[in-house]
Amino acid sequence: MCVGPDYQEMELHIKDDIEAFGKLYVINYKRLFNYMLYNTGDIESALDLTAETFFKAFKFRDSFNPARASFTSWLYGIASKEIIKYFRCKKRDSALIDAYLSFPEDVEKARLSINREELEEARRQLELCDEFIDLSVTIRKLPVKYRKILTLRLVEDISFEEIASIFHIEVEAAKSQYYRALKKLRKTLLGVPTGRASTIKGKESISDMRVLEKEVE
Figure 1 (cartoon, helix red, strand yellow):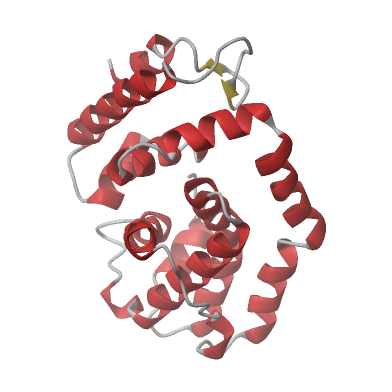
Figure 2 (cartoon, one colour):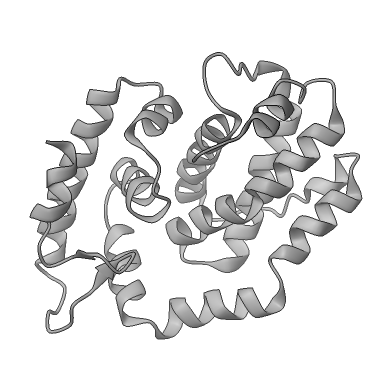
């Protein structure tokens, strides 16, 4: 994710500036929601997990160190832990961030950005789009560690450098995990009916994983 100087300036002040945190919340909300939706396949769970992630980011904002990671990478790190907990529990309590934060207008703005039409579109994709179903269902059959890295790289288009920062590993280790995840995905896809050219972002063929594997070479 490319960030400008204004974004970086806001990162420096989230510990003592509620407004700065609120702006970062608005900027990152939709992207984080999409990440949660793709991992869970459930809109309500995605909304709950997104709220829980931002609540924890706010609660533990003093631990954020911009010298070690960007706010977005740090946020995805928290989100990844929430996904693990979600699949362990399979049940989530709603956690509304505006019950804890002091910028209700920003919260409402972010929530309105996920409007009814967009939720209906997300539901339509989940229920009607063959390509989306093939990919999301297949990825959710994989172990959580593979599911997370594939979603970050293939769906969110996160760089290997950012992925390494999120998981606190070296870049080469991130590439290695991604490669193993692709191999696991290819093996799992052997059981998926063929006959249609499913794509990721409209450019990579699921039936030919070698194209994706070249990314780590």
